[in-house]
Amino acid sequence: MASLKIETINVGYPGKPVLIDVTLPEIPPGSLVGVLGPNGVGKSTLLRALAGLGPYTGTALLNGENLNGMSHFRRAQRIGYLPQALPQETSLVAYEAVLSACRAVRPDLDKTRIDAAVERVFDVLGIRPLAFQALNKMSGGQRQMVGLAQVIVRRPSVMLLDEPTSALDLRWQLTVLGTVRMILGRHEGLCLMALHDINLAIRHCDFIALFGDGRLLAFGPPAEAVTSDILSQAYGIAGRVETCSRGLPFVVTEPTQPILPPTGQ
Image 1 (cartoon, one colour):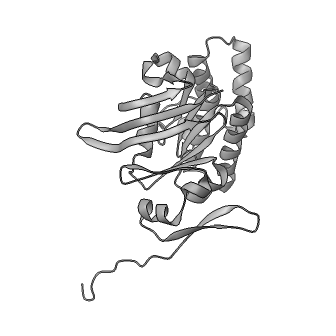
Image 2 (cartoon, helix red, strand yellow):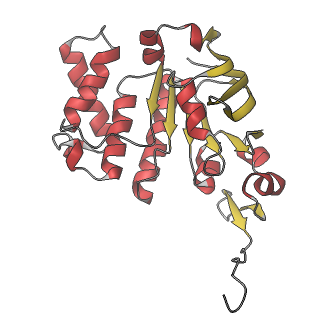
Image 3 (cartoon, rainbow, N blue to C red):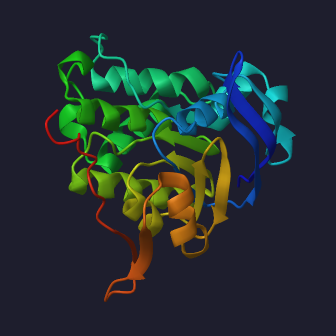
């Protein structure tokens, strides 16, 4: 089981704060948290910092243990991070990449169990046909799925997934979200997932953390966190949340007028 609590975290770069005083209540085991906000608001910076790849001030507690107090190896075991941009130049085949990811953090497993874990994750994600293809010959979406397999095979307590559906069509987007939810249910881990599709997030996530203007604007269940006022603050749009005939929420936005240059220019 895993729970995560974030207290007054500040992330950014030297001389350039990005997010200030981010505080989230304790996120319970099994939760999928959608991290939303406009481009450049700091979603990726926050996930990188929690993964130990960027500096932050404040406190992040995993089961009461301070992330910054963990060794690099222990942090790598407990936290699985999928970046938004994956390397393209490697000639490794997908199976080797996932195998290496498992070996790096699971010294307790012998070869037979590691091989079984790798086989299982390819089947769970439905990407067995990619197993022996070179990563540098794959599309962006295919590399994204292999990157997710590298995270899942390690069985971390917390998954930090940065736009894991951005290069995928609708079928594979739903595969990713369904697989993540299944894993959270089985192992009682938790996941913070940065997404740009609000409707995808509010339909599939347990909680929404919505950022704007350098700060956390709202956190809570989708019906509470995503409101007309919050959408206006975060994105500068007029929108509302409605419910379809199946009882599922979705965001409806008002059309915006393009800004045209004056006549004659």
